[in-house]
Length: 118
Image 1 (spheres, helix red, strand yellow):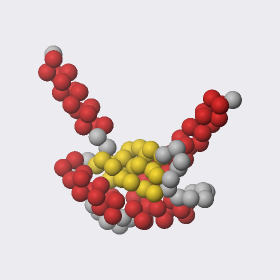
Image 2 (cartoon, helix red, strand yellow):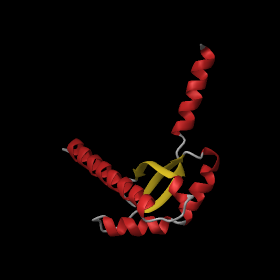
Image 3 (cartoon, rainbow, N blue to C red):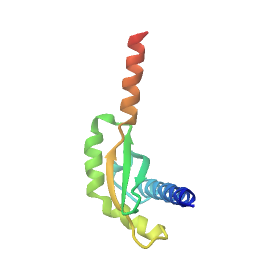
Image 4 (cartoon, helix red, strand yellow):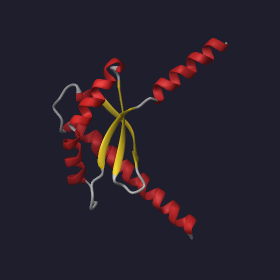
C-alpha cells in the first residue's frame, strides 16, 4: 500500500512539473518583452516533495552569457510566479529558483574524452 502511494505521489509531482514547465515556457515566449530573457530555454524543472520550491534549469544558445541570464531570470521571477498563480490550480504557488543547466557541458566533456581515447 505504501509503495502504491509513493508511485501516485511521484506521478502527481511529475504532472505538476510538466505543467510548470509548460507555463514558464509560454510566459517566456508570449508575456516577457526583454530580448535577453527571450534567449532562455527552460530544459527541465525539479519540484521538491513538499511542492514549495521549484528549481528551473535554464540553457541558451548564447553559452557565454548564461550566468548573466540566470541572474536576470532570478531577478524577474515574480513575473513567472504570477503567471503560475494565474494558470495553475493549486493552493500555494512554489518559489522559483533558476539554475544553469550543466548537462550539455557534461555531455561535451564526455564526447571530448571519448574522442581522445580513439
